[in-house]
Length: 327
Image 1 (cartoon, rainbow, N blue to C red):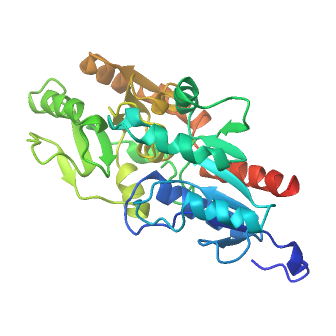
Image 2: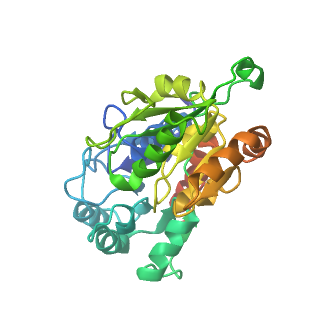
């Protein structure tokens, strides 16, 4: 879309410090693609470098060795010296608790000093960093993740009729143990042993090499329409991921109309899934049975509280507009 009547001097330029990495690479990928498309449709110029003066920088990951990284915090500081009106939105989607690391919290704290506004991707993540280093006197907001609704949307309820088997699904790009594979193995065993005779489990993506699946259907990593089409063939989503800052896997499942079975130590996942799912900690079997029994009710709760990529990009664009107007 072009706006020939708009004075070119009024056109706003937004720079992302990361580019999209090809393939199923995680939540940052989908976030960048969605927000960049939305901003372009609103006549922003979207760039991935600081070669030209920019109005707003979207700082996604300040680490030096991140795949797809275009420029550093130091580069932003130098750009601001020559362009004092430059504003920085720092999107925080990580923490050390997620993967039992011991560096990420410090990296985020050290980078955050250049931020004019900080966006956390869940209430849980905001509270986590506030307890460690973030000062609430600084401007911040919480914006939940959302997937592209042109791709991730529910199927008709009528299309599920006629199939007696209840199909659970999960998908992960990372095989890290905290993604919940110990619990997926328990569900796999419950199905294999006949405790859940009318259920099956689909596992999409990657898993630890040592995993010995018994009955699960294993599917190679997928993203976009291929992934969405797989998800829409299922009935319930299971996420046993722990201490997630926010995550996208459960969002994509929910936007395809799947109620959740989720781990109560899921971190930011719980912020959303508690509205339309069944939580568990020690008794997965009971949670799974309850979800099967209440799946139609839970789906109605989901459809009233469904995640939204449209809402997500709109909220970010509102912040960007305010930053520019106040500069």
